Image 1: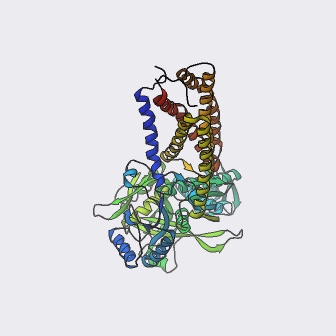
Image 2 (image 1 turned 90 degrees about the vertical axis):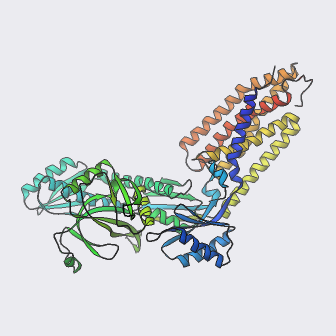
Image 3 (image 1 turned 120 degrees about the vertical axis):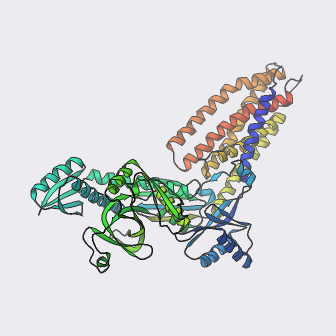
Length: 614
């Protein structure tokens, strides 16, 4: 019998559309204005704090939708933006500097939908609002850090080769090493130049060997600093839950960062500017710390303060840096005290093993390092970053350490969690400063959404009216397919983790509306031709769909190839346009060919027909 689908195929079409409709439905619920409270280094988020915030808001007579402890933060959902600002100011005053109070937007999707993995479509910066930063990497700091590493490497390698030296210091373009005699200098030059072919070695006189960074090495340092900063910032932002950030390179030393949905620029800066890392160094037991406090710091040592304000005299030699940390997690020790579990890469494990094998029973310090912008400017007008060092832990080495060990002596669980997050995401290779900052407000984003929805609505309305007038009942079938196509596009966009809808993406949806109905026009016109050629209505429907299929496939496949090329070579808005276009092409072929055929077969298939309403 012509034009009859088996039941399984009809149910398959209905199931696909129903699933897409289910996953598109969270977009109907929108987002709530919210205030997010997270802990600083010396605070923690817990149930008593939640009750304190709730009581304070109720006492002030402020109406809120809900307040809940979500993970490591408290989220207060509100009815409007004005209340959101009012609560933020009030909580900042009452909670103090130990807590970070930030504005945010929280999804209002019901819990039962979230339990199915359904979530709203991710919106780009131009639709949702957020912050845009243009950030510049401090390349001078990257080069200084490379020279510091050279100093440490030279000291270690010369000591292992038993080549005695007087001092190893940073110089303008590299590192200077002073020796006691010419013979040792010559041996050291031969040894170091063999193992460091990207450095230029020369005898400066006065028993000083100069190691100068070559132009290629300087270029490599800058390139590495930029790429690593991009990678680390992306990891850090992802772990802190910012949805679909855009982090990409611009020029030789700049990075573009866009964070959709972030309303609080202070919170965004805190996320991006954190430059925390660790150093592991031995405590200097050969000298008296009281002499160092009085200003007599011995050569080869450094005086630092711990968190309780107690002085600690440490060796300058760095046993290990945070660059070798591949994983970090917070937990509790056998006494219920917070700790951070560290996992190193193979090179770091070897360094830690070599550094601790001869120091069992001696104290080792964990130094926490941050770079913070100061009020000073350099000669180029760029912000000068200050280096802050603090001893967070001094522990006696009980046994030879390897790739896995732990840091104890941390004040609170939240501090352990924050430290592990920063270490897990990585430390920025070089400090960064914001040279341009723009905030796209939610109101502007909503205006873009409204204009885009108007374009989709009017384009859809004109097409629906035309199809009903021109193709009558078959036009109504095409309109059903067109509406189902829009639902499927939204559903698929909501299901794909990496898909983000931007303003050009909405243009892609508008374009898809026209392209989706094009396939039905080809099919319906072919059915009309078959009827004019004398075929029966059932034969006309059968041949109309079969004959138009190759033409529809050719037209859509070539457009799909163009969309894939745009996705491969484009960035930002171009990529967003290509994603919606590609999804729209695939869903429109499904609804126009399989979907409409299922409806036509259900209504007209297997019946004796004298004529068709087409």
